[in-house]
Image 1 (cartoon, one colour):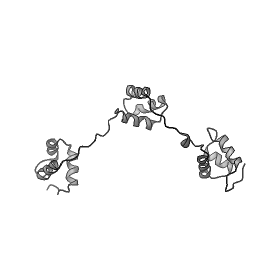
Image 2: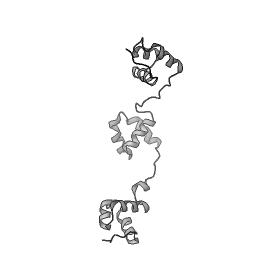
Image 3: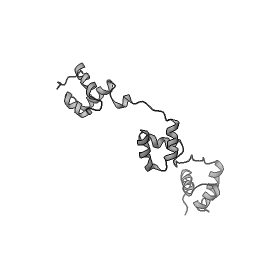
Image 4: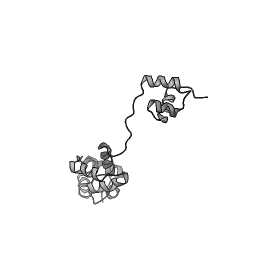
Length: 155
């Protein structure tokens, strides 16, 4: 249809504007214009035609959040909820996390100097499980701190 030139012509821009939205894909437009897909996409961005540039953030409403609280049970339900709300799965799941509806990793408690000293003194004579119970930590947390403190392994 058009001959490839280094500069975009008004005729080509008009063609993009008329055919980009919903009608033709970037690869098809590129073939029609005898341009590369990358050049065609970049021109669409410059003209403000891409979905990425036209996307506007939509704030969560109280009704949407109420719907999430009432219907969210586990991750597989996110797809149906997202479809119902007209949101992406990712946005829906992230909002569930923000609302505290999912089991997310709790904030880790910092190790105090006293706890570290206790580990240094007792890690050879007690099991990691016993140390964890005394410190209110998990076995893996105790093991991780022993490694970070670079304490020699038990023999």
